[in-house]
Image (cartoon, rainbow, N blue to C red):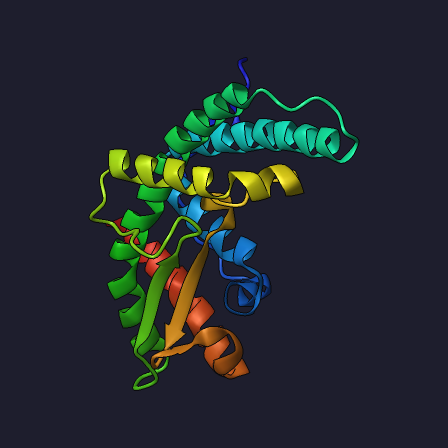
Length: 214
């Protein structure tokens, strides 16, 4: 019998789990919230598993190239051919724009669901807000087309190229973004009490469930 890969059942088996680790969505680092968004995006649209994989692969290749350039620069070696970096910029921009567009669309849809869920869990305790903070710039929103997001990513990469070559790492892109969780117009991280943080994490999972069942 043929084996079934995990990605083959994405979108067929849809589950939402609430666990103690979910407190990290509120109190943890941006990577926790990016993972939450991307896993929900993939559950909603299974083809995004391939896009996420492509982005990680391109990012790894680009970082390897930047690291080599940084090492060569420190040791007085030959300068890197920037045309090679241009090619990886285009790859990163293409898959990055797709991932960014999906995240922005998800947040716009999830926001009212999360606010309602928090009101159900903690009546009168809200409102809650979900806002995307992009390393690309402040003018990134769900109204942007993928082509516009691509151009913004490319421009942002060009703007930090000198620093990237010095540091040997990609400084802008979806892997550097964050989901800002607000509670009563304040950042939930650092402001929300322990109980409010639990309620917020639960509300996010309930909102995810509502999103996937619709």
